[in-house]
Amino acid sequence: MTKKLKVFRVLSSLIALLLLASLALSAGCASSTAPQADKAKGSKPAEVKQESAKTVESKTDDSKAVTLKAATAWPKDTMENEPLWMLQKMVEAKSNGNVKINWTGGPEAIPSFQLMEALRNGVVDMALTSGAYSVAQVPEAAFHKLSQLTPSEERANGAFDLFNKVYQEKGNAVLLGRGLHGKKFRLYTNTEVKSSADFKGLRIRVTPIYKAFVESLGAAAITIDPGEVYTALERKVVDGYGWPEARISDYGWQEVTKYAVQPPFFVVDVLILVNKNAWDKLSTSQKNLMTDSMKQVEKDSADWVKGEIDKENKLIQEKGVKLVTLSDGDAYVEKAYKAGWEDAIKQAPGNGPKLKELLTKK
Image (cartoon, rainbow, N blue to C red):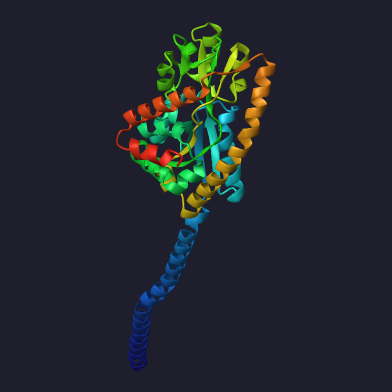
């Protein structure tokens, strides 16, 4: 038994050694292959993730949807806003909804004379406004009204580029374009005037656009927001006002106006501007879409406005407003441009002479 027990113990020890050796070998193999397995497992997800990132990056430039917040210097249903509505529909349709313009309000939200500052500070991404409301930030804006060229002619001869440059430098804004070309300004009064001399002593509501001209006629220039003009006329605070040929009917002013003075003068400058920071975030194709659409709006709105002026003249005459033509109409218009050029160059002496050269019909 004792001998058998010794043999059994020897055999057991040998078996135990064999088992330990086997386990050690298995562990060694496992430790040598595990890192390779981990590396193999990690490599494919890393590659897939990288490819996915590249795919997203390549699509982001043109496919990321953009909504631009826009405000206008005029109330929603007024004629001046028409170029923005045209642009809004066009860019959304052409981009299949990739670019949208969201109107956030008119002067009830941001007063007209504060809109340019709101645009410069990024409170809104876009603004439809006038040079009259922008001269505090961009003095060269005073020249828009004096242009004797169409928008396309301004783009061709360098005037547009010069305007765009100063808007970016002084207003942190990109000039997209201007609408309603062909629409001009005129004076309206509640005192009959037959010649330029009859304006002397009258109190005329103005904007910076025709302030110098009104003063050159010997009248007192009074600055009043559009929303206050009706009451000012009703209470005889003013004897008249300046406004485009159309549409005083948007404000109901035909009810408190007696005369519309001919001939008209200057051009209505309805500008569409984009905050530069918002513009820089657009992709190249989105910028091109906005620019091309604006060029089309410039043409479409010019055609549209011709019919609106005819409708307006008919409407206000039916309401009792009389169209009067001054006996010295040519001299009246010459006086307007003389005062306009002098005032504009005084405000922007650096770029003024060049702008006058570019904007004068050869």
